[in-house]
Image 1: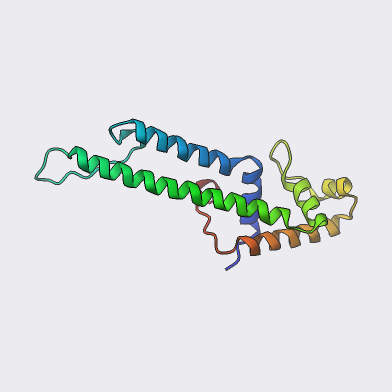
Image 2: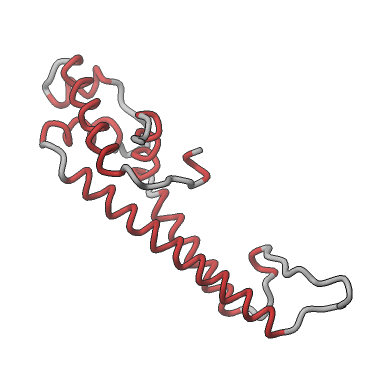
Length: 155
């Protein structure tokens, strides 16, 4: 099922602000912390202690930590693939669609430009800018279909 336009716009805004790359750096930082620290308290994971035992063995902590690291590495790799796919989708747009999209969503301050400003900048009518923007978002939507976007910032 294709993503809705608002979600694609949110993805583009977040991508412009390097949000996905920052998320990936944060994951790798948490992985490094986990590998350096002997306990799991650094990332708020808790190992359930059975009622008949007062503590958890070091082997159990090691197993949980390694499982957590593996999950986080998979999450980071999935995020990396998503970023690559998004960049590829943007680069494969038609030149006029890409110029509208880049002008509208990829601003220095992270805001979204009004269509009238994009129209002046790209030398198109406002209605044509809206049409090109719609097409570009649909192409990106199609290209990204199948990805499950669950990052907190996009909800």
